[in-house]
Amino acid sequence: MTENQKTFSGGEPVIRLIGLGETGVKLVETLAMIGPEGVESHSLDTDNRSLSRCHQSKTLLLGQAIPCGLGTGGDVALARAAVESDRDRLAKLVEGANLVFVIAGMGGGTGTGAASLVARLAKESGALVVGVAATPFDCEGTRRCNQATGGLRDLKQASDVVFHFSNQDVVQMTGADTSLNNALEIANRHLCESVLGVSRMLLEPGLLNVSFGDLQSAVQGRQSLGSVIHVEGSGEDRAATAVEKMLAHPVARGGEALQEASAILVHLSGGEQLSLAEMNTVTEAIKQYASAVDLVVGASGPGRDEALQVTVVIAHQVKLTEVEPDLSAPIESQSSEVANVSFPETFMPSGETSYVGLGEDSGGSRRGGFAYTPPAPTAEAITPELKDSLIEAAARQEPDRKKRKKITQEMLPLEIVSKGRFEKSEPTIHKGEDLDQPTYIRRGMVLN
Image 1 (cartoon, rainbow, N blue to C red):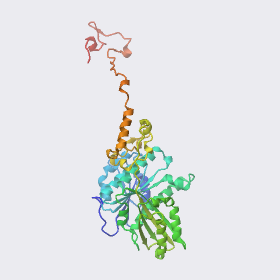
Image 2 (image 1 turned 45 degrees about the vertical axis):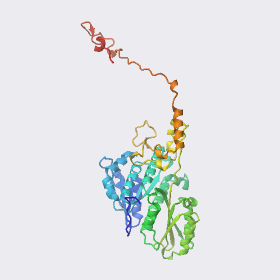
Image 3 (image 1 turned 60 degrees about the vertical axis):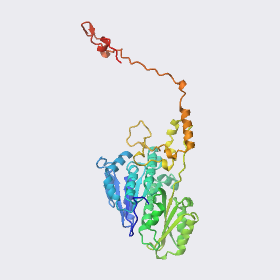
Image 4 (image 1 turned 45 degrees about the horizontal axis):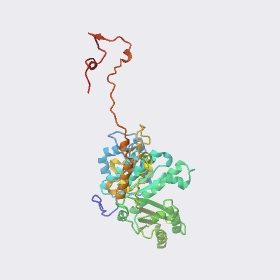
């Protein structure tokens, strides 16, 4: 536990949902309508038009001092400036919360630029911070996808855990022929399941409670990625049905996600008829894939008696794989591919230096053309072998001094005086001197 993080002293935890940008605002509005009671919902944006459509959540227009009341136009730097201008109000917004969900769509301006800063403020206040992020379809363009990658990295560094869902995964789930409206609805449903699953797990009165401390132990300070599976089973063999749906869920990836987990929280809600046999059916199915993982199980009585609801929260650490650069390749060829390289977590930036590349077209003037460019490795991350290879590469790139051309300094044509449009005019002669000539030439002065 860090110096700023506080311990939970009992009672119900204070949970706040903070939606940033157009996507975040829409999701928070939906969650405010269908979510459990006792969860505070706040919508934040730089576009007053999206906030005017909010009726269930409290709203805050960011960047009024700049101003940018019509959005940032995809400009991450402007979004960051908007957050900085409202830092005091945002600090008060997260103050006193035990659990803060920072919900945003990545790739645009406000959500991408503001999410990590708000998450950092929440963490400084002592809250457990859960990021919920959506990333764009591939067809939305390289610039937007690169920007989303940078925003997701920064949000992960500022949060305890991030539940991430890629819109592109919907295409793989449903096929390319699905409608855009249906694809977005599926993506939004998965994101809402993440928030609702965790919230209900903590707030519903339980026969076996999953406490706030259990969630803290699973994700706090790990900067991990997480996912949530929420399924229902009904009928005589509802537990087996729920297990079948759980393993078929796209997030589970056929059980592979369970195998990669570092911690798993399971919550069952089956009404008064919930039996130990049903609990064993669900937990044993999970243990087949994650026998060595910390497993926390909770159960609550409320719910529809005919349905068994199962919520599984999966947290897993991202493996850090060092990437050695191809030192034999020309610098020009490396720079065009830098956005597609998977860099170690410790190499990824945070704070103000997160977005250091400008647009796909460096000569363009389009506002907001940011491309995410990972920085160079830190001194601590450079091994002796990598250091030697870097020195050798630098030596190969050093041109032969003997082959260098001798540099000569050229003289400026100061003696050439052009009369321009007056070339054919009569010279101005006074006391035998041509006044059209510069004074230093008429007087024979040498300029150093």
